Length: 195
Image (cartoon, rainbow, N blue to C red):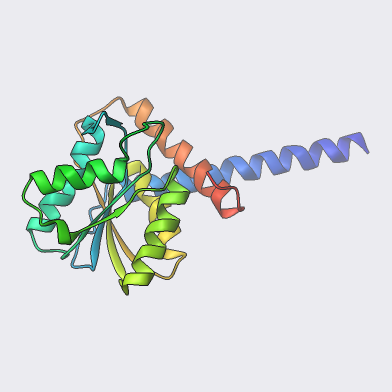
């Protein structure tokens, strides 16, 4: 009996590792693919802000979205992200302020300012899109993040194209670790765990 239980545990663990590896490969493939094409809105995933100013990561995402917007790939940009512990500013509002300072008309910007996680931001962004009658989006984030975000929005019946922000070469071990983390996050989300 103990041997049977051990075999089941080893088999389950092995299956989980294989599934994680398979999804991590898919995350990596998505991370390096720019699918940007005409859509209803460009959705920029939030990242840290510092007292009303975008962090370097958030700024890079916003700059990439701005480039896509200026290429007329979408008539709107949606910035996402809640307060993240800041009592005054939200990532979504900081994104909006940055884009307007770069010449984007305020009426072309939609703000999601409640999401405290990727799951919450994508759920709220999907709901905003549904209410506005928007069917397609270009998602802008770090490359490793796009696979999971696309799946979350596609699960809401939307057409989604990924467009990772440009990144300088980074430590390949850290990049690979991010692929694995996102694979685990995706698998947990698929099982109903909101991560």
